[in-house]
Image (cartoon, rainbow, N blue to C red; front, top):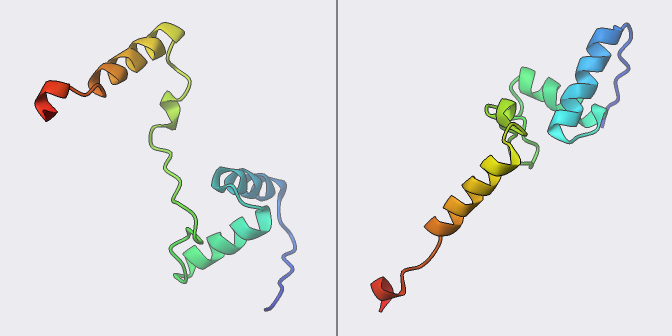
Length: 87
């Protein structure tokens, strides 16, 4: 297995790589390897991990306690089993 040394990495790129690594739950080294593989078409980028979806991240943490409780109550009601239907 080969090793590379990359010089001239600007602070902005280093920060972006650290953020991407954290988003993927990987070390910076593993994230850089995954990004390089993705870019040259050698990998689907998941490296045995589940894909990370971020299309609804902006909603995380936006519910009030009351809204969360109401949602949970509705889910509980939907998950109840009507015994008469299964007799």
